[in-house]
Amino acid sequence: MSKSTADAREKLQREAQHDQQEADRAQQNAKTEQVAGRHAQDGAKDHKGADKGPRGQ
Image 1 (cartoon, one colour):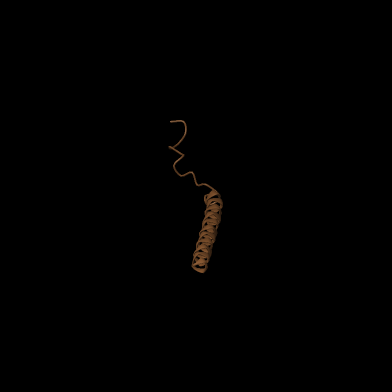
Image 2 (cartoon, helix red, strand yellow):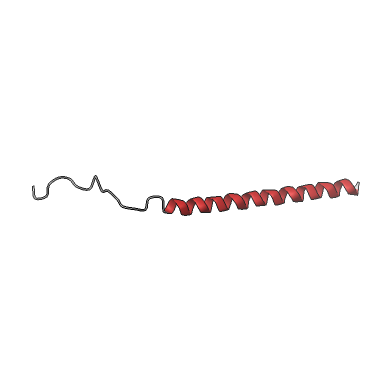
């Protein structure tokens, strides 16, 4: 009986380790996407809506 409990314990430990690895991978992907998102809108801005018409009217 101790063999089956040891196997079950090892299985639970492997599952927990696998879940932790998946969580770490997901967190790393989220950080990567966040950093990429910060720079997604960098560059020249056209400011098309800023001008209301000729000045001095």
